[in-house]
Length: 153
View 1 (cartoon, helix red, strand yellow):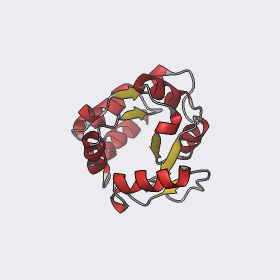
View 2: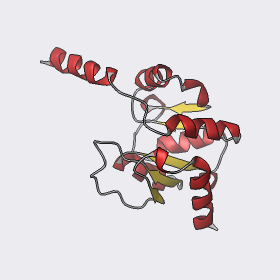
View 3: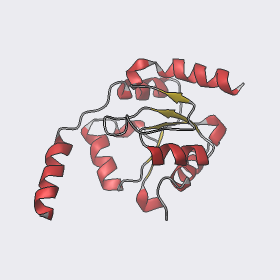
View 4: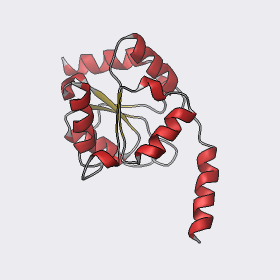
């Protein structure tokens, strides 16, 4: 049974596509000289394989995964480690999250959180976030940075 499940997982994973707006956010962040980090409860191998598959690996200055912490999200440790490695404060940061555990981790780390749910998480009851988008294609990164700056000041 496990072999069939693993085969199905790999089949579905092979069909994954980069979500709308992700590449443009990464490009815009790079142009603005922003540091980009990734904090994932998944394994480093899994994360890096998809970043490389979608040809976006080189945008990330820091990648923290489950191997870097004792507890994964909703514990804020992944975010805290990423912030430390980037040498930035939570107040200087924004997290883009698609999961409840991820949003709880970002908020617990003191980071402003933008929710961009995926098809699996879009019906979940997200709470305590700073902005909710249906897709990153909905607003440019500059627009979001402006919106969040106005809400903080």
